[in-house]
Image (tube, rainbow, N blue to C red; front, top):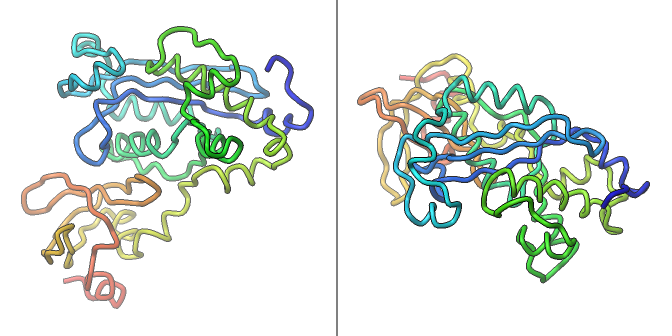
Length: 281
């Protein structure tokens, strides 16, 4: 689309961050990490800045992942780590722009987890999922990025399944999607609400005592129900909330052994009522 429709101009003019990651696998709450990042910032439909880098995941890249993205251990050996310095670089790049990704919950989950590992609470964001828009516009059809690229006659500038190539395609796909008749008269707030995610829903998912502990950097004690329905006693130091698959988790450290762990806040039991009543021992 070389000339944006007057109908969709209000959507095009926003400040967006189109982004994509290549990763070691599919499970950010386990041990999988980002190995390549690409972000493209646009204002009024024009590219104003880019951020692109390989990332050293500090772990071997599984063969299955390498077969998909053609990224090897040798290629990331001298790449920067996703450490606090890099995390802050990403935050500065994003600022208050609207994040856009295809199957956004996947990439947002990885970004949230990488931020949490560096002690950064990444929660004041808004994001749009082009997969959700495509599913609404082309109901019952294949809506992966490759299918949309062919539907809109978009030619990739390189091999797909590399972050910067996928991100460039994503940008073009998004501006085509918002110019569809069913979408172009939406306000941006409606797009976000129907086809996106918002990080500011944290208070709905994380109990008050845990939020207070995050702010005060204090420990939390209480009963916790494990995935296999076993009740255990926890004594942890909450580090950061982690958003994954439209749910909030807690990245914390065990005060007994210092190990990091991911906890689902709704599995905390009596601790919530006791701490709300001022009983913390």
